[in-house]
Length: 200
Image 1 (cartoon, rainbow, N blue to C red):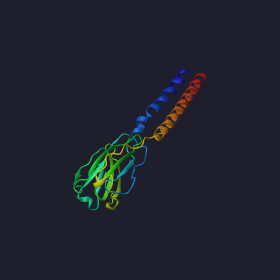
Image 2 (cartoon, rainbow, N blue to C red):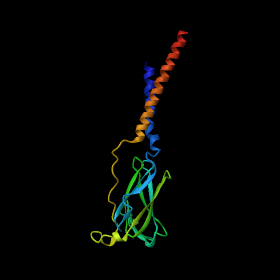
Image 3 (tube, one colour):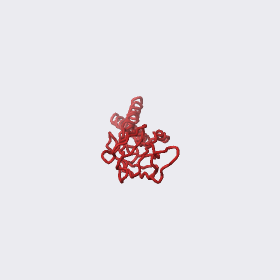
Image 4 (cartoon, rainbow, N blue to C red):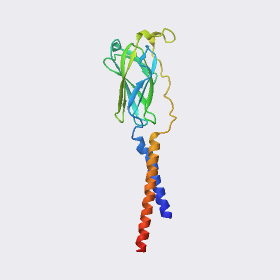
């Protein structure tokens, strides 16, 4: 009986202890991206979100200009208080982000120059790319108070905290329970065969 309990405990612990490491390798959510607002005023902050990356993976966010006047240069800020005027038609601007435990990210961004911009996010480890998502910065939506001159805004904060259960953990818990049941069944079968051989 002691051997049976030891075998069951070993099978269960192997299934449950090994599961988080395996689950961390696979994204919990399908790859996709979106923005909180597709049309914003110069300097107005919008949020670029995406998912489908590895948990804790570092990401490269690329902001590429489309139609003029954005091709003449723009101030783009996101993540940290980063802002630089560059000729964006020659070199798209890149920002950094980090995926959360679910493989998702949320990054506030502001662009000071009117035009159309394309945003993508690339996982630096997995190579997963989400996007492009298009954002239009409309000069007609420029504000005259508070943020005069369309100066870029600083980072407005991190994404929301994860308050739900990890779907990967639930899956691997079920796998562990199945492995435990299979181990128990095999122990019972082996003991019955041993008793049958002794009786014969």
